[in-house]
Length: 277
Ligand SMILES: Nc1ncnc2c1ncn2[C@@H]1O[C@H](COP(=O)(O)OP(=O)(O)OP(=O)(O)O)[C@@H](O)[C@H]1O
Ligand SMILES: [Mg+2]
Image (cartoon, rainbow, N blue to C red; front, top):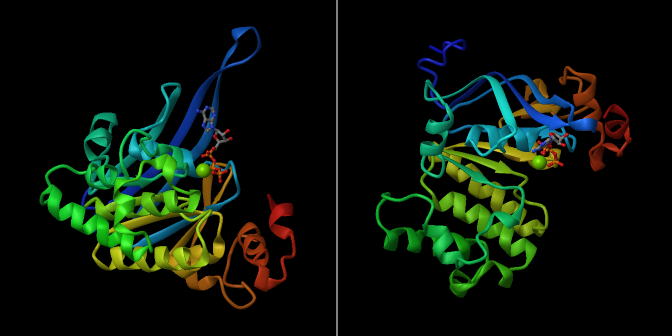
């Protein structure tokens, strides 16, 4: 049984009426607070892939960074984030990061320029079965992505954009964390690598991991996830089963979600999505 108010007995992630603001300084050093996430609630169970789809600037990365506890110092939050029923304060987020919850960051700049790919792939989670085993697993993941074993010895500046993205995805998959937050994992990847990413995410979910897939690509969201949470202006306007994105879209409740669906190329790119934003 889930108790949505306390998170008690809720397995996986529960975000409950969560708001995030940034303290800003305007003209004459006037201080004001800019709220970018508004009373957002979402849940994600083990073994489930939930997509988060929404326009640029709607707060998707801020939500991811808040769950991971990597917001900048001028940010403050209200509401709550629970994992396996446990409220996550900043200290717990730091303990969980890279161990129980991991991030595929939106920017490839998160790769450490001074560490080889191999060192980064096997470093995130100490104490999970030994380095040699993790190295083997990481090499197999790279191979799956068409990257040769030598790539383990490359530094980030030796990778193309698409290669760096594949390394970031492989890095999260090599880490034993139960929850993966993938923030736009596929831009710059070719079609084959995108397909491989979808397969990999489904496999990881099959192993019981939860995946939050943040993407602009509604087609990828529908192909990968079981549910799609539609983001607009810092909150989830509705969460719908991925299967509702079919036919004429009449199973989709919100006009914004229907506009998002109609904007798919195979639905004639009506341009409504832009208008709706
Ligand atoms: N450190 C910060 N200080 C002030 N405002 C911020 C900060 N970080 C993000 N924002 C604002 O929060 C809002 C949400 O940003 P966010 O990066 O989460 O968008 P997004 O949905 O991930 O967009 P995209 O799809 O382009 O990645 C934006 O208006 C952004 O300007
Ligand atoms: Mg973002």
